[in-house]
Length: 206
Image 1 (cartoon, rainbow, N blue to C red):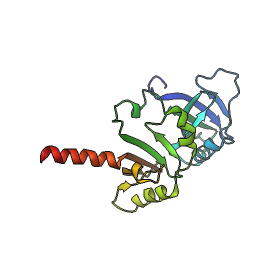
Image 2 (cartoon, rainbow, N blue to C red; image 1 turned 180 degrees about the vertical axis):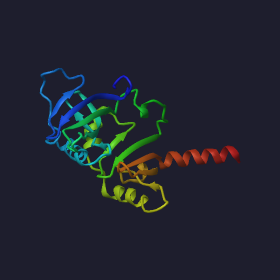
Image 3 (cartoon, rainbow, N blue to C red; image 1 turned 120 degrees about the vertical axis):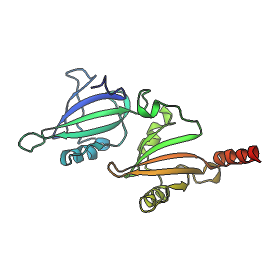
Image 4 (spheres, one colour; image 1 turned 135 degrees about the horizontal axis):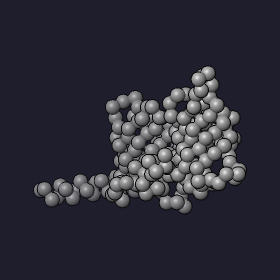
């Protein structure tokens, strides 16, 4: 399965109580974590127990693999309708073979995936020494409110930077909402960079 899915760092199987019993790339006999007792994995694991759809968990650092991963989980139902096991996998956010790293993005462009609960799921230009700050800090309420308002209207262009409040760092962002997974996809560029490009284009054509 990992040969087919190059962006995956590992596949695993957990019991219904949350205890992982096997994870690829981790030697047999090494102690594995319990998904229901970890704050970053608990919610998505519990949802996976009760829903047929795939659940996407909060991005977190899995120390057993030594990588920051986006966890995805799906339950396994037996012929009696019980859920003895949950299948889980981790998508490498820094992997060169993941879909968001398979094409070049201009350095002035920021691509983000934001969870409905206000945490960052992915950011394309995140430095490794910033991962804790980016993935474990809830975004500010003003920005989250603007995101939620895009679901209620046809307006999908907002002007704000989620990390700063000063004019110099203001961003222009195009937003889409993936209802099935509760995720916002955001493509942004700095307002002054966009203005500069527009100004240069006007000068060239005048």
